[in-house]
Length: 461
Image (cartoon, rainbow, N blue to C red; front, side, top):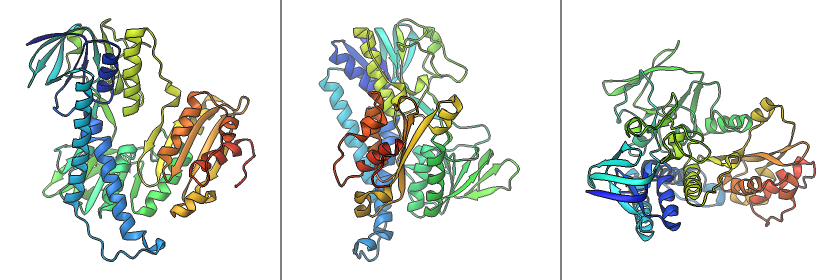
């Protein structure tokens, strides 16, 4: 079956489905192709959403087991029903993917289920459920990314798996080795640590959370160690393999380590190797990322690309905003995305959130800055919630006072960072943020106090 559209989006993840909906809103006849009947991509099916569901459930278990007594609540014997926890996770995914399919239908976007491969600069060959040749005036590639598996790692998807594997363990492994101390590794390590696994996290660099503000990373390191995670930094993994019913991990110049399961959380690579880029004349860099200009246009005039497959911050919200900006540029000639104000969040407990530049980056660029800090312990709401660990840090230009970066670790840090992102998007100064009235008692007052502290005007610290 052959179909013709104004625009076809290849990939139904958070970049692709958002781009398709926005294009339909702007009057285009739009088709979207994904190999799964449940649209939403890796993030929704086997990434962001299911992992956060398990993080919340495992934290609830941890709270019930260890933290209720301080509130005067005696819960008695606490049991773990892992099957029910997994069922809840699956139900959430099903509800949300069904919602995305409904949104696409409501906006009259044609959904095509199958694997798409570029046949030319205007054609995509679809194999699978809705097989056929699809043509379009313009194509947006939004195929996302896949876990990076390094040589020497004998990945089998069961004993040695990735973050997707970690979402469906039938039982908590007694010993779990996590390779990679970034966002994904810490989140998955936290889940299974709470559920009873002895977790060891291996990181090739000399610190955890590479790329995040160093001060926040050090605080996180200490906090997670207190929770029971075991970190080994400076560990270059040479191999990981299954030996009988156990796994063996060999690091350079180290004794072999053994565990029941191994999780590979060493980053992600662009999912571009099997989508027919050469057939359409679409160029990539050495790592496989599609090269695009400021309008998201590839080396083929009719083909655009967004999200993980073009590099940068591999975050769902970045992909979604790129999808909107790309479509608006195509239809209206104008679209905008502020790459200096993209927040990132680690959904551990405590949460770790960041937007803008780190202290290390500012020092490297020779930018003079002032710093304001407020600990959670100075906040009344944090006291009533029973969790006072953490802090918020604001970095502002020493000359103009414009906010350059905000970093937080603590309860609901991921929600607090939204205010900072809005402020940075509108080029606010720390004084602007400090002079906004914040309701009392709320955690948001920590942000206000940190902003006041930038210019040594803090009231409560």
